[in-house]
Image (cartoon, rainbow, N blue to C red; front, side, top):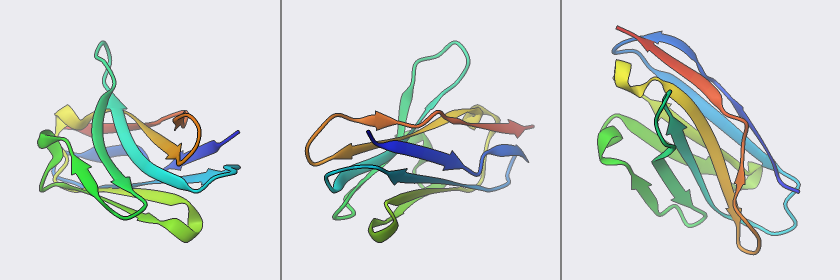
Length: 116
């Protein structure tokens, strides 16, 4: 069973920055894709960014140019640097990890609140 532990959420003013981290443990197989998703109240969970083990990256259009995803394969950790935060970025941010073999796993989420 893969466990994901997220950290780094919090309250920030509009225009500010936050850095999220997510460490994965317990996987029998190397983790291929790691990513961040977010869910605002009353809305569906949406993709923010994903990164493969080979560092192929995909961003949602709404965060391009403001957010940067990165990972440390040796530590099975993925990061999300969020700059120029807007009130519409307020959501619970979830980490996901998909091993080469097996299902996708999810973290419990970390709250990000951007005050305007």
